[in-house]
Length: 333
Image (cartoon, rainbow, N blue to C red; front, side, top):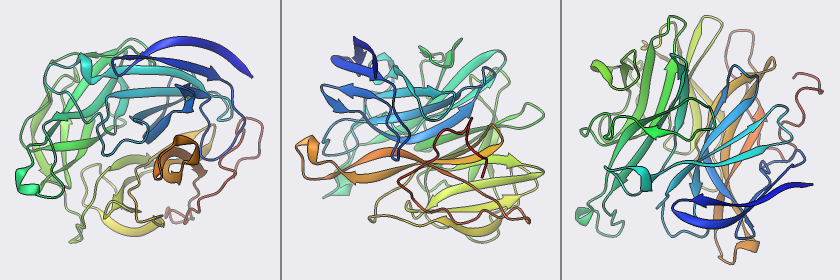
């Protein structure tokens, strides 16, 4: 049932949006239409804040785009994982002075009474036919808000660093309040850096983590803690979700293997969070979109239950059409 029909700015444009409630399904139905078509979302970053709601911070694929020229970041929230509220674009590259494109996978954190959005953005052109002609560059910024739904403001007006080229930030705040920033970097993977206490800069040098001798191509890291074990998860070779474990957020890490297989030879990007006692995996799928008018797969955010073995290892996860359902009234799995 529709509950709001309004006009909101998205990526510098005014588009017709329809926001409504949605029944449980997979991929997730956020009930948000842009120019009559469902919004295309990817790279979900899931967090549960002090108000008890689950928030998803996502990237936003433009309809039928030829490449990943993305312009804003979206936020959705729910208190039961069945009915979602779309909060619209909470930051756009139009608001940045140092980048104008590539609004890719974001992450978020709460610290010092503020909400922080770490986001990748960049400029230039990527020539996929003749890579030597590419001018593309990407860096990681940080935006701040008093609300989990924004609007967020680029508080430093610059990337956290310019070298190395980096994207796919993941923020993890440990039990002692230390904030660690993980990311994907060109020829600079498997590094982590501490954030300053004010979250407006980095502190110290990049730390090269010990991955136990196994460092495959990766992107989109996600780090979380369960009991006394830290988990470093990632799309290995940009496709298969795999993970390491450690007793410290900077390693040394032990490789534990795959927990979600690839699909369609396409990239995946995920997050893992505990909500109302249940662990959940959010990720994106590439699905045919016959209603779009373009003959191609597009990305959609989905969710599954995540379960662990007694030794802390992650059980393999299968993609389902049912997804996670109404978790507040359903039986925990």
